[in-house]
Length: 405
Image (cartoon, rainbow, N blue to C red):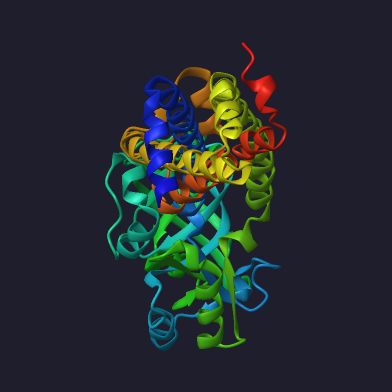
C-alpha cells in the first residue's frame, strides 16, 4: 500500500512530465478508437446498402432455385411456411417476391429488365423501397401499374404516366404480355438496379407470368444482423429441405471478398498507427528516465532494493497508462457519436464513384461498445509493455554513474 501511495505522489511531483505522458496515451486512445469506429462503420454501412437495396439479410427459395433462377423453380405461397419463419425470434419481417426477366418496350425501343412482383407494404419495411421513389407514387397492394428505375425509363424514353409494354415467358412456357402505366420512377445508387429494375404488385406479376399464388423467394429482415448464420440455420431447420435458405453472404460472395480485402488493408494501416502510438509513449518514457536518473541512483545508493524501485516504477506506469486510457475513452465517446450522427460525406467525383458501385458516399462511425473497450485495452497493453523499459534500465543502473552530473 505504501508503494501505491508513493507512486501516486511521484506521479504528481512533476506535473508536466505526468501530463505529457497521460496526454500521449490519451490521444493514442482517441486516434485508435476513432479509426476503428470509422472502419467498422464503413463496412456496416456497405452491408446495410447491399441488404437494403435489394437482397435482404436472408432469402428462402425452392431447393435449387439459386443455381437455375427460372420461373419453373417457383413454389406455392404458404401461410404455414410464413408462420414457421416468423416464429424464429430474430425474424422481424418477411416479404414475398416473384422475380423474372422480361422485355420492356416503348414504341421502337426495347430493353431487357428484371421484373419483380412485390407486396408493397412488406417490401417497404425491409428494403425501404418507397424512399427511392423520386417521381410519382408508390404501389398499393392490388395495383396494376409499375414502378420503373430511372435509368430504364430514360433508355425507353418514358416518363411518369406513360404506358410500358412487357413481353416475356411465363410459368411453364406460357406467353407473358401486358401493358402497364408508369406510376412511379425509382432512383437507386447502383447503376445496374437503375437501368434494369421494374416493380409490379405481387398479384399483377403473378397474373402477368401466369403463376397465380407462386413465388420465387421470401425475403427476410432480421432484428439482430449479428446472428445472421444462426438465424438462417434456424429457418432451415424449421421449413425443411424442400426450400433453400441463403444468407446475403452466400448469395453475394464477391461483397464478402471485397470487405475482407479492404479489412486486410485497414489492418496494415492500424499496425502503422499502433507503431506511431508506441513511438509516442516510448518518447515520454525516455524523457522520464533521463530526468529521474539521478533520483533513482540516489535511492539505490541509500539502500533501496532495485526490486522495490522496479515495483514503484511499474505502479507509476500502471496508474499513468490507466488514467490516459480512461480519459481517452471518455473523450472519444462524443467524437464517435458526432461522426455517427453527422457522417463524413464525400462530394464531387469521389461521390460519383461510390454511387456507381451502389454505395452511399459517406463514412459513418460505428457505436459498438466493443470498439471502445478493445482499443482502450490494446493501448493499455502497449503502454504496460513499454513500461518494462524503465524496469530494464533499473536492473542495469549503476548508482555512482547515475548520480554524476
